[in-house]
Figure 1 (tube, rainbow, N blue to C red):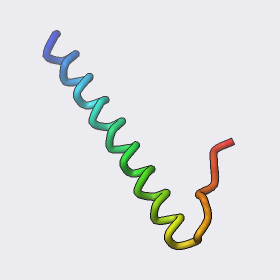
Figure 2 (cartoon, rainbow, N blue to C red; figure 1 turned 180 degrees about the vertical axis):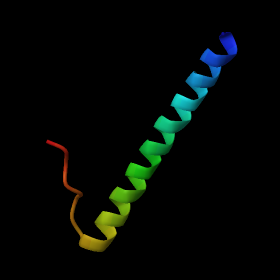
Figure 3 (tube, helix red, strand yellow; figure 1 turned 120 degrees about the vertical axis):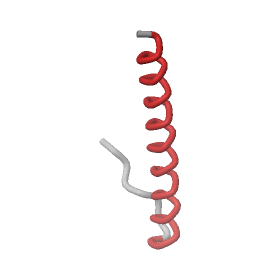
Figure 4 (spheres, rainbow, N blue to C red; figure 1 turned 90 degrees about the vertical axis):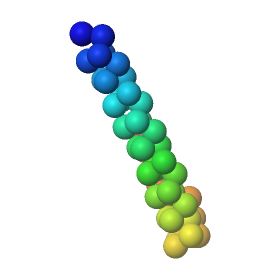
Length: 42
C-alpha cells in the first residue's frame, strides 16, 4: 500500500515537472519565432 502511494507521488511529481518544462520551452520557441508573448489561457 505504501509503495503504491509512493509510486503515485513520484509519478505525479515527474509528470507535473515535465509539463512545466514543456510549457516553458514552448513559450521560448513561440517568442523566438513570432517575437511576441504566447497567447494566455482565459
